[in-house]
Image 1 (cartoon, rainbow over the protein chains, first blue to last red):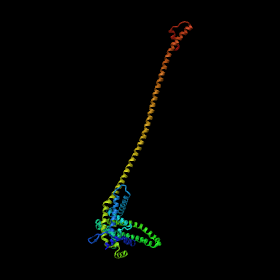
Image 2 (image 1 turned 30 degrees about the vertical axis):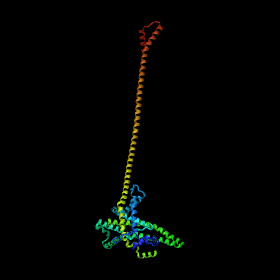
Image 3 (image 1 turned 135 degrees about the vertical axis):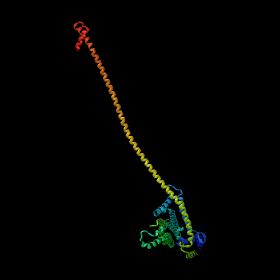
Image 4 (image 1 turned 60 degrees about the vertical axis):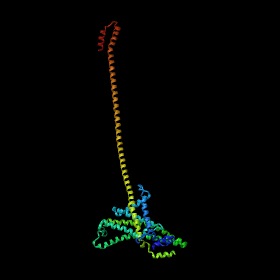
Length: 268
Length: 174
């Protein structure tokens, strides 16, 4: 069914565009570019998959091409790659110590993937990969399962000291431990919802205000004058969204570093 | 027509970010793409950047060491130069003193030899004067005898013998 709708949309651009102009939700729709199905699962190559590939292609391509010269004196582009490296490395080292550096490729990949995916979302007509909750949930689950598996592998049962804060009287333990467990469980939820909700809400807001401009300009000369306000707001929101796009990638990577620190040093 | 189909599809569709029918596809493609990204980052990009930064910091440390080494060397060279200069100054002073001393000694020697020469000449002259004086004194007797013989002849008209005159002159001289 969805397959048909997707092809239908692709086939008739005019309808698609009219739809995009009015409906702030349609930008999150997934359309199939290459329908595939294996064992009853729909694994079509969609616009979402296309932008995941583009995200990986751009980030990996940029980082590898700019550093291929291995310049002792970096070019401008090589400097950007080095700054990204040092930014994430500094973040991880500060919060998880030198032992945390074994997770550097993971944290760096998460940061660059979310950053580039968010930035891609800022282009009109581009699909925002991180606006789908399943994507952010999978990324958060990757982080939390890394924390749990590495934490238990490294500390054994000592990992569960994470739930037992030291220096707390025994009497309040029955109260504290469930709270700590609950806060640990809520981590992947908050990690994924924060990113997803920020991207979703930001893009909807942007779309709604931009839609006001179109609607008002359609209402004669007074409407055109009145549309200056939503236009100004759209411009301001675009700037804000760029900030949010970076900030959410930073927050996700930062929290990943802190959770990894818990896996390395569970007793706090 | 378009609005009808939109309305119809919107009614039966769920909110796209929560649409469960797209989950398998997104999970699969996310796993593939993120896996590729992780692989490329951990195997190629990050080790490469890390080695670039390492090489650079090594190079900077090496250059700083080299600069320090050169600085120490130049400090040593300056110290050696100053030492050399002080030595040369003291040597120059010594040489000047020596030259002064040598000149003075030479002058003294010359003066001494000249003085000795003069003394010799003076004593020789004195000797000669003495000789002349003795000779002159010796001849005084003969002159006196001649004059006496003449005077005797003029006064007496006679002649006195040489022996008489000699004894008379001798007695008058004494």
